[in-house]
Image 1 (cartoon, one colour):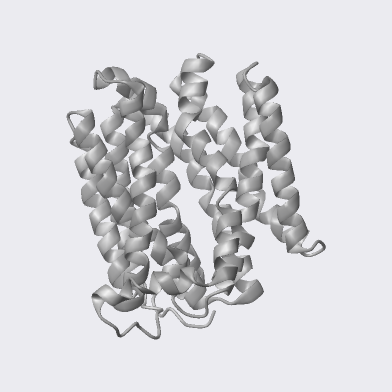
Image 2 (cartoon, rainbow, N blue to C red; image 1 turned 135 degrees about the horizontal axis):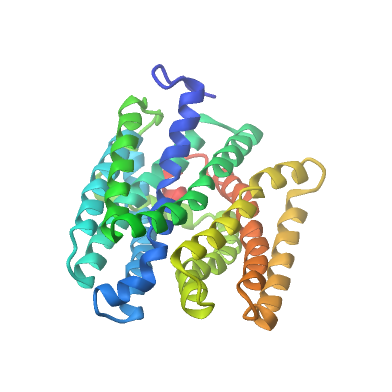
Amino acid sequence: MKQTQPILGQKGTLFFLVIISAFPPLTIDLYLPALPTMVDIFDTTESMVNLTLSSYFVTYALGLLFWGPLSEKFGRKPILLTGIGGYMLASIACAMSNDIEHLIAARVLQAFAGSAITVVSTSVVKDLFDGRERERIMATIMSLVIIAPMVAPVLGAFLLQIASWRMMFVTLAVFGACASILAFCYKETLETRYTGSLVRSWTRLGVVIRNPRFVILLCIFSIAPMALMGFLAAGSYIYINGFGLTEQQFSYFFSFNAIVASFGPTIYMKLSRHIAVQNVISGCFAVLVAVGVMTLTFGDTSPWAFALLAAPATLMVIMMRVPATNLMLDQQDKDTGSAVA
């Protein structure tokens, strides 16, 4: 570790990074079991309920572009605290929504605030670690973070049984409050800040985009997660409406998928010791294509057939995250926040 954290220490820093990296999967996966029931609760259509998810993804992506350069100008800690504070307020707003339109609006705010947390989590890893050590730390973080999508749908289904969908967002607000304690203990890791104007800080995105090696890697590694995003958006409908499972049964199938995916970072680290990184990545893409063809062929025969095909696909996506992030960060010596965005 290139810098010390007086309060957190080395193990505390790793725990801190795991917690703030867990925001996206928790925010997405916790309320997935409630999606089909929300159609009846709000007396609306599936497409409107799906907007609570799709609007989150779009705003989250745009938010990364907004917060990334700002983390280079103001530092990681102010952006992190702002993001967590906004996330808590947005989560409470979600819980208080009385119609689908207000829930969608609150989810947009939640995504915007949550993207600030993601920018900081990845930037801090780049600030503190280099090379193979950074790759190892990222693999460790991802292996631990994957616990979130294992637990989240089961917890969500449980909350749906004992309370209501509102309790899911209250839980997210409480998680944000707990994370804020660690955020206050975190010592700033950005050593050199961008000294230009606020407006010009966003022009640093252009510097990153003009790096051809970075852009090529970005295009390559943006393909695989598309399948995962589609699975997250449609998975609950496929299992509950398509296969006729209950919310609790869906949560078990979803957790099975996450358990398989949790081995991704570890498998990658072991393979990369003996096989060139490029060959590992090529193999992952080949498996994704093969699984996609098989899913189209007989993925609709049973929930287990679909699950046994979705699991290796998710595993391949997670396996590629470690080298993808590490390779792209290696292309930028500066402007880490913009590169993360």
